[in-house]
Image (cartoon, rainbow, N blue to C red; front, side, top):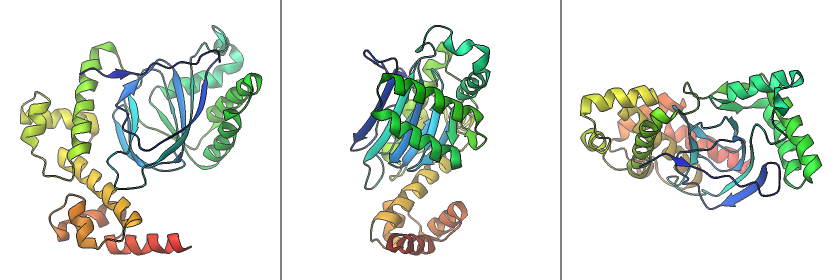
Length: 287
């Protein structure tokens, strides 16, 4: 199983600007040689960028450098999985060979270097970028070019961002390694609500249990148990937000089989008990 490489077609345009809607996101972990900016207007789930794994929500704004493995995945969510997002994809030479190498664009080149790890923007930068990206969707070519330069200038000056992955763009020598992690990720996403035996996951990765434990911790910075519990807690949060279920029902629906452990784990990770979290989200919904 190889790491999927997406083929991006700009047609006659200099770069891609598109507004997308689809029922859910189950796109495999993938790479492409273009830079990519994604603004999520509607969707939540799990985001994978290099060796970074985290939940994402509406308002998520990311910039990925070339050949950096990434995906947004939410097929495993319990309900309301619809995706609505704006995507911009561009090659470093889209405005002409060496265009961004001019001294005037030093700040942009520093941004491109940081983007090799994947960047997530928040705060005022995200709000300003959202307006710029929405304006670019229906802009003509000259307006879109100006919009792209303005957007990159905004991101280059931003301080309100986080670096996502310790791993930079993928090299050919680790393609096989990333494909293996892709296979593991999707197995866990499809099965986290069931009992998962570490022997089965290790066998799927063609590793001994001891080697798998080291391998998985190296790539995710979590043990298998921590990773699966994080998926279950994330799923429980969606259930508490979206469905009228008892805490006991949420516990078992999420893959836990012990209500006391579920309550402890949930409070440790979220900072609230499941019941308090459910009540808080009901108040927000009413508001």
